[in-house]
Image 1 (tube, one colour):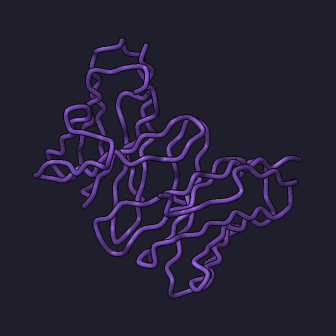
Image 2: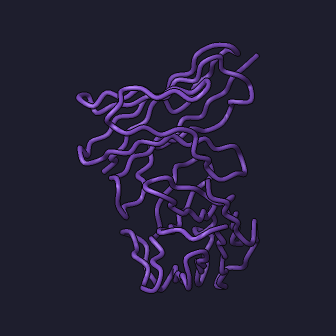
Length: 113
Length: 113
C-alpha cells in the first residue's frame, strides 16, 4: 500500500480567502488525484494531477478555482481559491500505485465561514 | 449519469451475521472493481478488489462475488463484527490505464451486538 499524508488535517477559513492543501506520498506514484467528499456522501473527483503538465479537471471544476500543482512524483498541492461556504467539505488526495491500486490520504476537513 | 449503482444505502446487521452490499455497473469497459472501507474522520481504505477473470475473491472475512453477464458485484462480510461498522464504497475503473475510479454512493453499515 501507499502511505499518503495531507496537511492541514483541518482548517477554518474566512470567505474570500484561499487555502492550499499539501499531499505527500511515501514513494513515487504514476497518478495522483484530488477528490471532494461532503459529509455522508460519496467521493467526487475534482482533477487528475499530472506530473510535468497541467491538471485535468472534471466537469464542474475549473483551474481558476482549484489550481493544482504536481512538481514531482511524490507531491501535489490543491488550492481552494476565493472560498465560499459552499466549499466547506473534505478534500482527499489519492494516488495510484502499480496497475490499478488507488490509495487515499486522511483528508483535509475545510470549513468556510 | 451514475455509472456505478450501490445498494442498500444503509444496513444494520446483527453481530455474527452476514453483511451483503451490492453494486451494478453500466460501462462494459470496466475491468477492475475495488471496495473501500471508510471510518468517520478517515480517508477510504482499499479493502479488496477483483478483476473479471474470476467470479469470486476471498480475503479473510471479506468476499467479492462478481457476475460479469449481469454486470454486478457484491461484497460479503462474514461473521460481521461491531468493528466493521463503517461506510463501504464500491468502485470501478478501466485497467490498466490512467482513468480514475468511479465510485458508488456508499453503504453505511452498522453491526449491532
